[in-house]
Each structure stands twice: as C-alpha cells, then as structure tokens.
Length: 345
Ligand SMILES: [Fe+2]
Image (tube, rainbow, N blue to C red; front, side):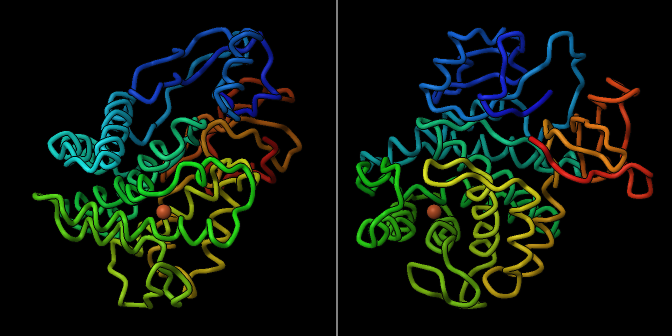
C-alpha cells in the first residue's frame, strides 16, 4: 500500500483505504479501480493524496491507530458538533463521549500503536479530520506521559473540540487560498477564545476541555495567542494539544504551502522544544508518531527502494519494490543492516 500524490496514480492502481464523506459514510470503498473519471472527481473534491495498491499487490494487515468504525463515527460526531456550535445549539455530548470512549480505549488497549497513517483530507473535511487526528495524537501523547484514563479522556475531548471556535470565523476568510492579511489573521486568531466561550457554556463538559481549546495556540515562551500565556500559565492539556495540533497542521496539505513529511515535522518540533513547546511533551510526541508512516516510499542504504507496510512503536516492516528481493517483507530493527536513507514519496 502506497500513499501517493494524485499525479503519481495510474488507472491500473486500486484504492487501498476507503474514502469517507463528511457524514462518515464510505464514498469509495477500498479495492475500487481508480479510473481516470474517479481520479478527476477526487481531484475536483480537493484530494491531494490517496492510499493505493499496485496491480496484483498482496494486501498486508497493518496497525491502524483507530478502527474505521470509530473513525467514521468520529467524523459524524465532529461534523455534528461544528454544525450545532454554528447554530449556537448545545452539542450532543452523549455522542461525543461515546466516540472519545472508543477512541481512547482503542489507543490505550494497544500500547504499541502509533500515529502511522497520513490522512485523506479534502476541502470539505479538513477541520473534521484535523480534529480527529489531533485527538488521536494527543491521546497517544497522554498515554506515553502515563496519564490516568480519566485525564486522557478529558484531554482527548479537548483535542477533539479544540478548533470548535472556527465556526465563529467568517467562512470567506477560511476559504482564502493565499497567505492571509494581518487583519484576517487577527480574526482567525480569535478562534481559541470563541471555542472557550462555546465550550464553557456546555453543561456536563469539564472546564478543562474549554481551557484546552482556549490555550492550544499558546506557546511556552509567550509567543502564542490569544493571551500570550507563558510556561506554567499554560495547562498541561493546552501544551499537549499545541504539540499535536502543530504536528498535524505541518504534515497537512494546505493550498498555500506544501506539507512537511513526518520526519521533517518531528525535527521542527524538536528544534522548538524548550522554546515554544514543552520538551517532555515533544519527546512523548516523537514516541507517538511514525517517522516514516505506512505507505511511504523510501530508499534504503543498499540503494533498493521499498514501501513501509506497517509500523508500530517496536517495529517497522518494509516491502522491497526494486532489486532482487522485490515484494519480500523485511522487519527493520534498530540493529539491522538495512537502514532508510531517504523518503522518496
Ligand atoms: Fe486552532
């Protein structure tokens, strides 16, 4: 299974991961042949990358952070939460709670699972998938920091709803496909406060969840917004979601910039550890994310090319795509003679 930009996909390839619509329903299921017509339609919908199989490629099980069922329910719940917040109605907390319970349990019950899949975002689902991914990453960071389950759940809920305040921003500004003017940026920078105001008025929701939304753009050195909080003025959840959100945003395709690959985003976070981000949390993030996620096409120190077919906290499995070992699987362990030199796609 490869994660390829649309420009690299040819009609004999088939879809390896389903595409969901924003209601969490499968729009295109895995196994579908990617005819030029489908590819054109997906391009129009704003997809940049897809997971694909080469013709005749053997399907290999991999360790996904959350099940497709939970992903689909999370999609529905986050969309519904944004819609309700937009209308200034109360959220369906029963639904949010149930989704977060599944998400947290799946991650806690599988301690070696890491954030290894890139996502399938497009114009319509950007904020929804972003919210789910940030919740998944924050949950893993919480797990790796040894937080108790009730704390992980609170953190995960805050991460899931961290950008809810975006519903208060003029959609005209959000749809701009260029670098924003200062005034537009200033308006967007209000979204943490809007999120806080929406969430603190939710009966039954912990105030820490509201504060997570309020603080997710604050930075350790006071350079963040909206209040320029510093160091321990920022709650632990705020610091965690700052790291998870930055990683997710850096690795996402936006119209105005090309995304970082995971290894580049992790390097960037490490560079800012102790300045903008809490170093212990950056380390927990590094332990939570695949440096080369599933579907990456890589070049090895032997000159052979391979695809990453599975990755957990303890092992990384590649499948050779060139050379005499084509199609063979190989587990790269820290001591193995094979090393990844470079990510190609
Ligand atoms: Fe945000």
